[in-house]
Length: 416
Image 1 (cartoon, rainbow, N blue to C red):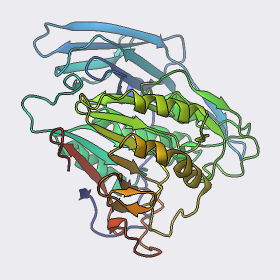
Image 2 (image 1 turned 180 degrees about the horizontal axis):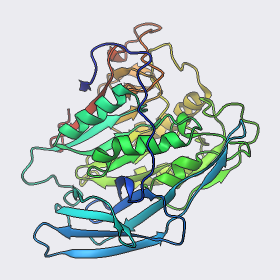
Image 3 (image 1 turned 180 degrees about the vertical axis):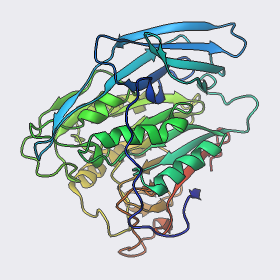
């Protein structure tokens, strides 16, 4: 199901005015931890320059629970673009709260430290795995891809803010479209804050997060600015010789960290993968994914959803025959079919497409997986509406409207 945020194609929309980092905490966003009912990560930036510890104070509405958590010191990252432009980030802060919250509980919080505190925000933890909230008829994810920061992007964020039943955002890569203009990460962080500070904003890297620099460093801003439920610290290797900031056929390595991870949320096991690293058998990502899928208890989380960036099933003319998608599908599709994954959400192609359940390019209602391309959230490159044909596995397409998706899990056997 797609919720539209514009009624016509806008190839070049107005870009949001760049955001200036203020003295108090800004660009606040949250992400669940490995156990979402008890864990939450808090992230933000400040203009601090000295040694500053990162803190978050959390309390319940009746103040029967109030606790101050302290993370590591804030830090900076720097990068030199392929054209030689140097950038130093604002101070970045993360606090990971682990095994300290209660399931299905509403909390208020503020982030900051040293008498510089953010506005008050709130969030609600989900029930323990295997359950939905007792006062709801299901759990709802907002699904987006290729958001950027145009007027259409801002409309998508505004619509997500108005949908009170959305509990979490699943973002299938291509976040800010900073494209090595690093200040645009700050304006994007400001644009999404009202949603991302109250609903966990879960991400995976797209090609616009590669941001190759002069020294072969990649994914620098993405790894620094987010705090996904990491398996272990990121493992990266320089990718020397890149000719563009955000290549669609990147063949370097970026594993662990914010690159791939999983968590249980209610009745669902959610997995995020990286299209832009080694995906072959024996690779770090493949080995981890195989172990993760084999450990899922379908009596607790009967649904398995996976998100990554580059689509395996795509009937639009854009991004056809890209090596990263071809190799990843070749290596990993058998694994997803073996463990009966239910649905995959991707971006990259700036349009909407939903498949019938499909396995090995053939419609298979008994054993197949539904693939949803949702790369139409508002980016500045515009929409795509040209197709190469009408394959049997393509159920629905829309390349003329920006929007976002809603994924609702009603119970153990019904989703929408």
